[in-house]
Length: 398
Ligand code: AMP
Image (tube, rainbow, N blue to C red; front, top):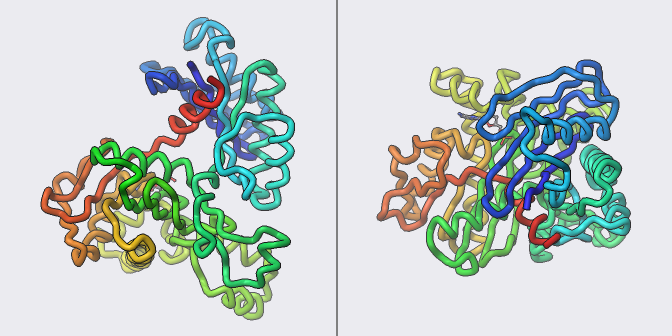
């Protein structure tokens, strides 16, 4: 069954058409600047050339219409008609406590997703717009919502509660939710397959290190803790996000710089992380890596602080799970940055981890990068959230 996977942002829409049985990506692309001047669609059929077209898109319905036209185009399309698209899988950022699993979209589900909007005001409304646009153009095609938060719903209370008045949880559902769940689920499961061991028997730590970054602890196939919290701001140091800070810093800056809460949140989300630590050198880890190798003080500082936080959380999750069998690296930096993996693993020698530096330099494969003697395995697993969404969607609509 062919599944159209849609990841809708406020002004963008990423898509992939995936054959859920063969796991092949048949075509993929991106609509950008939806509702803004200069909107553009890029489209790449498998094995074909990428084509970019600048064309007006006033809203997401027009964007989806262009996507469907591209997929069915006589010359460069990959299906003859929309009947060859069995279902649509939507990536939804926040499912709150309502959704511990992917679900077929009904009017009731739509309402429940809408109720989670206040937990992810930048993302969920855009995700809903994507669903409604698809409903308009493909009214008879089943649709599935796959939530970023769902995989983390197995966390125990001690991991998801904050040390706040319990009423905040009771009344407003303030708690740790965690994000990147589809990636953490895919990578941990894939690691068990690569190791040839039962998922249910393993203690796995997944380091999803991209522009946004989070770590999760997966014990016996279930997430028991993760670094992101109520929002994706908590935890690791990221491209532009601060990760954990003393909450009293917010009041301190407010007084020092006469800033509002909104202004400070903007700093924490957009001007902090390695961008802020490197004195605005870059939020891109490739630049930070280059600067690190060139011995630039600001880049070395940003890299060291980033790596130290990763090491600390790995240590915390080993303690939380009372051990670890495998540590996985994934996402932009985790998959492509051998330096980060080397620096992190150097500090894990006490656990008998020894990296094979030659394997650590390889890219694009599911790979164990420790030596055979290493007591704990370290793996690089390229994440594939779209495939996971396609598989879950196919399973539900079958
Ligand atoms: P993601 O959010 O998963 O797409 O990851 C984006 C991040 O991955 C950016 O900060 C990129 O700089 C980083 N990245 C991509 N390629 C490399 C590379 N070869 N080495 C280090 N970082 C990389």
